[in-house]
Image 1 (tube, helix red, strand yellow):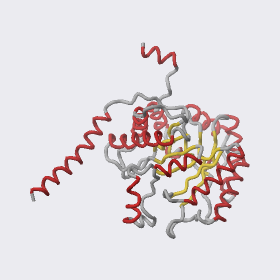
Image 2 (cartoon, rainbow, N blue to C red):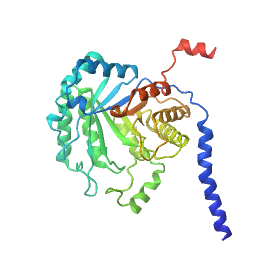
Image 3 (cartoon, rainbow, N blue to C red):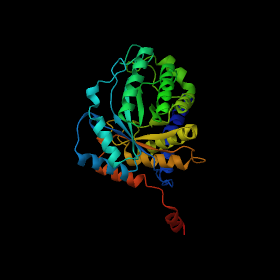
Image 4 (cartoon, rainbow, N blue to C red):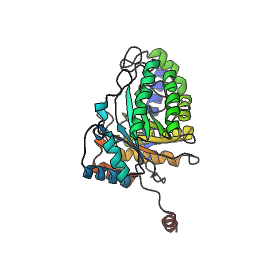
Length: 341
């Protein structure tokens, strides 16, 4: 009994130690500035419904003021056969023409995805070569319209998904031949790669699918070798203190940039929606965490990196104000020297 009691005390100590350590670490403000390469996931209405010229100008101004370089315009989803009905993106030509006028440096990408069929659940079967062929034909349609790239968001994607990698190979060949971009949204990295086989054995299905879909280091490198941009969906932490949420974003920023930051552009996804479970998670906390993760890097990645705002349909003016405050631009050299002096 005494051994059980001591074990309980030890476990309780660990439970208390982690939040306490995170709280102490959180008190030191980050020194890293924000970056000038950032992304935004945008609502389907931009490609599906008409807008006024004033609305386009206002949106373009918002992108410029907030240093948004890449916008993933929701243009799907894919049908089960890999197609997208034309009526879903009937406003895309007008949108692209307006962005060319008012925000010519912003890269508008077609955000396309669907629920991946796994173990009989889901909608689109990427293991079917004919479906992948249709997906590529759909990609061509959007590139022909003038989109700067294709942004895939298929979920769930497991680190043994050879069909998804095959689709990326074919898509990269297409986008590269057109001088366009391929970007991919993927879940945050698993905490322990070696645990994936254990999850696979013990959790054959979770919510209709297999074990939690988290990429391993090997799989992230495989994505980075194929995609021009990798957007990490680091949100939905479901943690209960801001310091723990911040630590989560800091660690994923550090791990991901260390792992693939020399190979591809990385965007750390940060939320503006209000989670019903992780009440401590918000945009300022996520941005501060990402900056602290950048502080922890031994050196800066060779490729550009930034954050991805999820999403424009949940982002208020107050959120944008918080973003500009917590993701400040890099100080000009002259001003930085004055501040140090």
